[in-house]
Length: 233
Image (cartoon, rainbow, N blue to C red; front, side, top):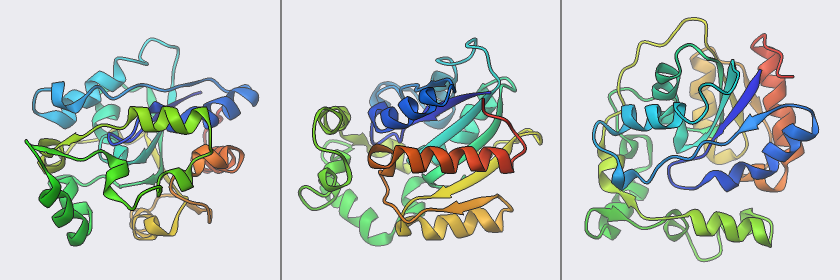
């Protein structure tokens, strides 16, 4: 069983680098696909992003455990659908649960949504680090090359992505779903996962704890994988 570590559409793959390293230390293979620039993808965006992501790991010797972070939670069903039965479990790591028929704005607070719409220029909202007070993202990431890589990967996001409703996808019954809550900000999402019947674990860390506490995050992910009846290594 191999891991696929999928970053949020608002960040880049570097947020998963420490966890990929920790998995490798434990003898577990992991791949980090890259979500293409959303402004270069035709509608329907969710379906086409799902295919673009799946194409990067299919043929690498699955089956796979897909781990998604933050906004990538909405993409996970499309990735599973495009992966030709190769994904056996999906781990939501501080991620938005599936929201068929609703767009991203409907999963966020009204205050955040209104703020982003007011800041939009030319159909684009600012890069993720500009959504928050200065240095907020820096306080959640280790100083040095990794932080610089994470910041370099940030880019403005098309309003079209945030406004497109997630598709209602008929998912295979043999895929397991679990939730790892890293921050109190995602307690509501963790509660929703529990209501869906997903195994749910909580760690009192922060939203980008993959970058600062990779051992704890990896251990939580592997614990969820076991709860879902799978063996990662």
